[in-house]
Length: 158
Image (cartoon, rainbow, N blue to C red; front, side):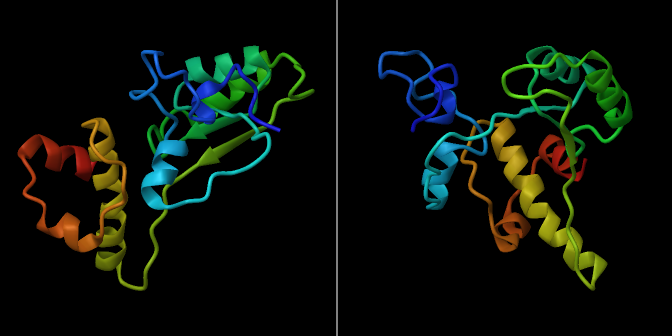
C-alpha cells in the first residue's frame, strides 16, 4: 500500500515535469534517506504537522492531524501553541481527539564541552539546510574545521 496521493512529497513521487520534482522534499524524508543510506519505509506513514508557532498549531487542529511542536526551533511558544491546538481541534478521519508531542534537541555527555561539540553537528546541519545545501549530518571534526563567516557562526550558536 502506497502513501495517499495528497502527500506526494512523502513518497518522493512528484511527476518528473512537476516544478517541485527536484526541489521540494520532506526533511527528514526520502531524499535525505537516500543520502544517508536509510531504507525507505513501506506502507502508509502517519502524517503529522510539524510546526513552531500558534499558526501551525491551529492549522493542525483545523485539519484534525497530530501536531508536533518543534521546540528545537522555537522553545518559547510551546504552551500557547498546544493550548490553541487543543482548544481548536476538529475531529477528522485521522483523529477523534487532539494528539500532540513536543520535540527537543538534546545532547548529553559526561563532559559539557564534548556535549556542546556533539550538538554542533546538528546545528551545522541546520545551517546547511537553511543554505539549501546537503542535509547530511557532518562529523564533529568537519564542524571544527569549517571556516564560519560571522553570520553563520551566529546562526550555529543560536
